[in-house]
Length: 272
Image (cartoon, rainbow, N blue to C red; front, side, top):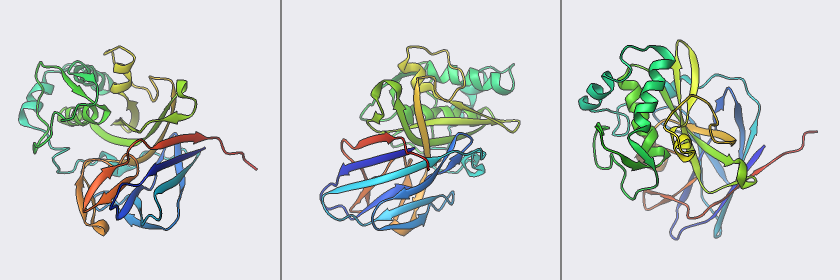
């Protein structure tokens, strides 16, 4: 399968930063194709990415995916000290009472349902943790949040409960959209006793339920992983502290800028 990503370039763009793809038990990004790519590394995880000096008014990138039975990368489960991953003591106290008599996947599911009760799905202008050095406890309130916001809280809550968790970014193509999507997506993976499970609270909320269960696609469709983790540094580009790399981004005057209204499409590739 190929995922093609195209967009208009913003004015004064210097470079484009592109996720390099990862392998999971469900598939692997085997190639990233665009003119003038230079491979670079994310400093905290060692992941491959690409920089590109664009020519013209548009950018066009192809991600090629193939089958894989590789495990999730160990590096995605390693907590790192950043404003997107450190959790406040109040959150530890809040989560300590959630499913405290449960263990394993049952405890993780209790934490997932607890997190789901604190969010409605949406895209607020300001995230619940903007400007904070730690992930705060939300208490009994309900907060609007995107998949990024919800998963930021979910991963912090899982780790506060002593559960290994990692953050995956990539693309999700809803079944009803005929091979197109509007932007990138993200989800969470837990590792308990060596076994991994995927969780997507945002898609449960979109389906009208807060009764969360593990599963790759609670909302019907296809997804493809491209990068992992939060709090990313790219010293080759002189930028650091990026919350996440979900899809290609423009670098403008040292700032990371998302492309406006990208065209993202899924294509079946004929095999020889």
